[in-house]
Length: 237
Ligand code: DAT
Ligand code: MG
Image 1: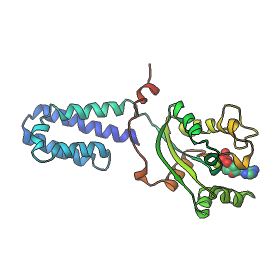
Image 2: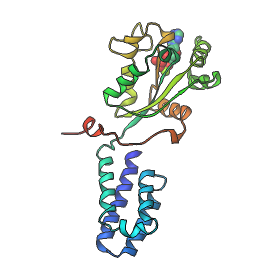
Image 3: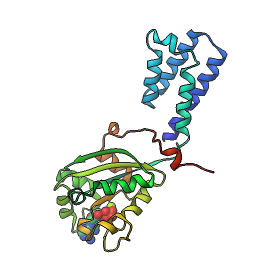
Image 4: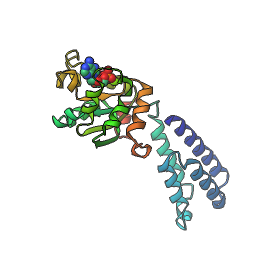
């Protein structure tokens, strides 16, 4: 989805470039800039405001020479396109036991060091009702009530992590549900002992990831940005 946005933004910039080359007149350049701002609005907010700023007041004449703004925009898009491979997102939460045991930094660092990117984070105490929504697929299980009581008993660190294969690999980093069966080297394997206090939650597939991200976060709480590390984490030879 993201890469589609970049592709369409990129197309617009390419169109802009050829338009600016064939029509050096500033008045036409202004129209092109306005079109670009409209096209980007609601898609890539940073670029939209970039163009709106470039388009504003008298600064426009000095800014939008076509020599300064367009190459900068192209550079930004190329930077983003370089790693706009289908990056997926997953919902990860450190449960009240993990928070109380001071394991936030330890757990975050495992995702961070792997090369995944944090795109949303907040500390919340979910209500029981909210916990029941989160675990709705387990409502028939005997431990459902206790599980929801526990999740809503204290602070939960809710996060969204982004990266290639992050849903499946996030589960690998986390380890098996029952820490007695989790491999050493995994979060639960290294840091937890029993299933009722297994310190962390991770979405188990693309559908649950989407649902859980939507349940825990508003769209504006998800931060899209380019990490400096991305060009070193991703790449083909
Ligand atoms: P996971 O958290 O690995 O996705 P799950 O979705 O099957 O596992 O279960 C959600 C949570 O419910 C799990 O992290 C801990 C708790 N749980 C699972 N099985 C349990 C059991 N047999 N007894 C007690 N709690 C259990
Ligand atoms: Mg689960």
